[in-house]
Image 1 (cartoon, rainbow, N blue to C red):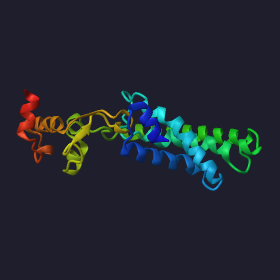
Image 2 (spheres, one colour; image 1 turned 90 degrees about the vertical axis):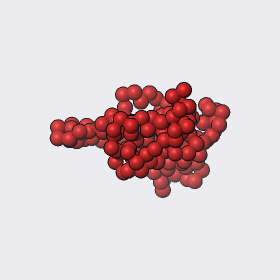
Image 3 (spheres, helix red, strand yellow; image 1 turned 90 degrees about the horizontal axis):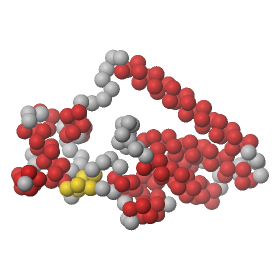
Image 4 (tube, rainbow, N blue to C red; image 1 turned 180 degrees about the vertical axis):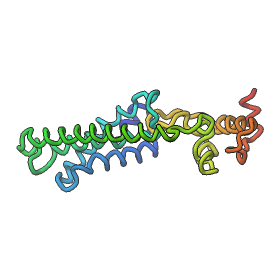
Amino acid sequence: MWALLERLQHKRSSATGMVTGAVVGLVIITPAAGYVSPLGALVMGFVGCALVYPTFQLSHRRVDDSLDAFPCHGVASFVGACLTGVFAKDGGLLYGGGLRLLGVEVLAAVATAVYAASVTAAIFFVLSRFMRMRVHEHDESIGLDNACHGEMAYGMNGATPISPFEHTQGTFKSAGAAQCSVASVTESGNEDCADLEAPSTSCSTVGA
């Protein structure tokens, strides 16, 4: 289902997108595991992915969620809990159980979301009084794999995503440009990426 939605939006499907769809499907079926039929599980996956996919397109300008953890796990789990009230063999809406189980599932999902958000916000606030909650901008620019672990995970071969949402936007820039940005940081005296060297031809191309 996820690959189909990608193809409808971008005229192509990606391996990353299919893996993302598989993870979303697992999250959706988790609250219903053992309570729905195999066919019901498949339908939940199709319907759930169709509902979750649009949330990956939301703007992230005010949310630091580079891995799309909230739509993948937060939204998908909420959708899965609600769909359990529809497809559950014992008391589900489609099995003659009426709206009772669906109402209970929706109420439980909302209560869980409110509790999780409140406790997380409280923990975040307390920690922010004693420590920095976001890495420095120059560490973000060279990549945390390099700044924190001393190695580079992306940008060495082929192409690197412009944004962290490759599986929904499918926009790329050349690896040479990415490496030149790293090289420029290195030349400025940043010790974190001193071990990285960009090919001079790529830099001269970008500079031209």
